[in-house]
Length: 76
Image 1 (cartoon, rainbow, N blue to C red):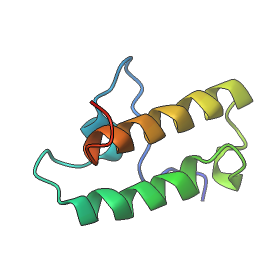
Image 2 (image 1 turned 90 degrees about the vertical axis):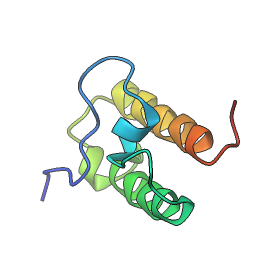
Image 3 (image 1 turned 30 degrees about the horizontal axis):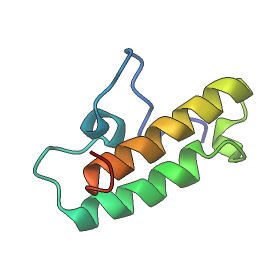
Image 4 (image 1 turned 135 degrees about the vertical axis):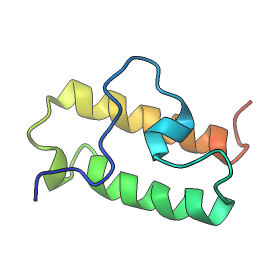
């Protein structure tokens, strides 16, 4: 289906938790497994994302990656 299980937030500057659809108490394991689901769904080459303009796909993917780095403590 084309309906996203974890749609990308529509408002500007969503928080990492909003992008990941996780609560602030989510475990690192939850974050990691959700990241893989988000990558599968929002990767610029994913079939799920083909209806979205390429520039939007790339910026979403960058946001997801940046959010993951924040949630896993790799980014300050």
